[in-house]
Length: 55
Length: 227
Image (cartoon, rainbow over all chains, first blue to last red; front, side, top):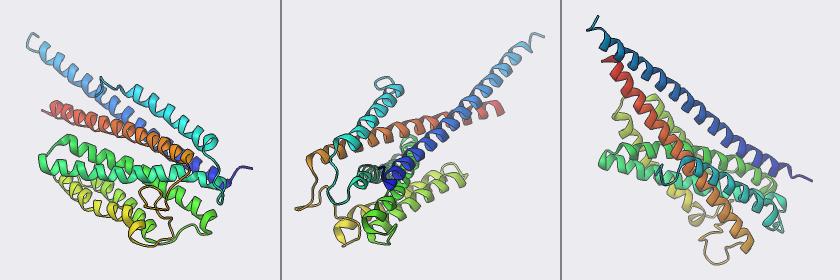
């Protein structure tokens, strides 16, 4: 027979770790997206800036 | 570090180590004579507690490093260690009562060890709240370093509580003097589980520090865009 206390303790510990890893992954994904967006903006501004003196 | 020991290798090692630890906990370690199956909570409870205490030692060292050398990396390390330490400390507070109820007949008691662990958990929360709510670069690092250093006193009390006072919590099994100890197979299981938890701790700290670096890069890019 499965010991209820043992089962709950191990389940909760893994749940805590999974939730934390999920939070970290979510934060990381958001940061990567923001960084990519900003880099694109900078790149666009840079290329617009280099085009403007010629026009 | 990234080149010597890539993050994916670290993650793979952590997962394999955790699986080995689980195998040893449930299939290799013998059943304890008086408590039976429920004693197997001990392996994760003890390992999480040691890791949470060690994490606070790293918060202390990182805080000292920041105040001494104003090293950004030391501050990142302290912050990451506090966050991951909080996760491990939460595991201690979850597994403790679940072991206490069948072993002592109560979920919780305000003895020296349990209370100082609960205070350590609150200190972790205080540190993390300070980092989140104070929006003053330069000042927040100093303030949290001070909390990290002062809070270390509780980590010492927590470690020494079962040595200094008679508590409901059992006396130490490691470095507890004559009369303390475990079956050799239990010892091995304890060390393998603690090793796996340490590997997980360092993996999570590493990820958290990478996140801090990316955030800094984001702030610099935003500044570039604004100027």
